[in-house]
Length: 207
Image (cartoon, rainbow, N blue to C red):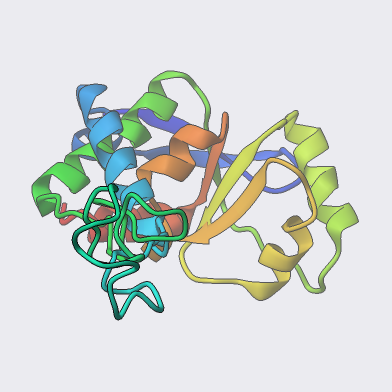
């Protein structure tokens, strides 16, 4: 069972915590990272790219010229695909790129990502992370003390003061446990959770 130190925001050790082996110490299955990230990125795609087919192009209601006697190939409409300004053959249309991924696979990928950061000693646990006011300078001071270049901070619940204090710092993101995902864990070199967030993660993953 992984055991990590618990710090306050002044980098003073205030205790230790045992992390669930099945969540923070499981075997890392790297192939799940690709599957989970692809699933997330596909769901984010707008899917608004589109082209007009021959039935969507304005005009072309009559033949451009008579069928016979011109010496040219017969044509039925100027909206045909071979004409400039005509329709597009097999072009893209509005659609959702999202696809399904089994819940067990999503959970396994998330556990692997958490375990990866734990085995890399890139996981920090805070006893709490509260800010009385919105102040980027105070958040940046915590980053400096812990020598974080990039950080994904996970809180048990959304905290506007903390989130807004961090939003202008490059490479930093604050999420509630409900929004914890594989992509953001892998996208940040360091992961930090509060003690209450650790408990919420365990509850979320059903342990």
